[in-house]
Image (cartoon, rainbow, N blue to C red; front, side, top):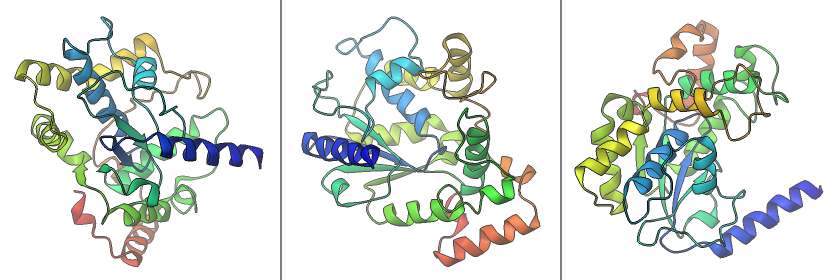
Length: 259
């Protein structure tokens, strides 16, 4: 009870600390949120007027720099004036979000389930233990939870970006994101930020410096595990796919939107 009240207090405190120029970066867990946060953080650091580290942006620097709703103290002054503060959240849409712009990052929910399942299995204190087929039916973590999250945001998000589009052409997708955010930087700065945030570079950084909270997962856990699209084909059996189709039909969500 005390923990729940503490979370409510943190969210309320964050709500009153929000600025009109703040932008929410929204996604269901394991949809590529970290990729975009690395890109934004690198984009900030590449600009001479904002440059804050000569080291590679790693997971610790990322979490110290880029705030998260309900976890960070948003009353702290944003140290990059003129650059919108991008605030991470995995929360479903609610009234506290309606006064700010929001970016909804969407990924094929089948790949999300594979990544999320592996993420939970490698935790030292997992919220779920069982088969993949059981995981996708989990009330709080599985496919229906994904549908409820997407359904809550789809008519409220200011901008929607697809993970699959990022994988196909990150330059094009991130240039469009910059335009939405009103960010105009030289091509060299933009391209450096894109390259430094690609999966292979984040994977190398993780190998060299680890995660911001190494005690959360097993020693062999890799946050930058695969990043591939279509990995669901090796995990979903026919029964799983039927359940997947039934759940999406229940919420009138078309999978063609994500592939």
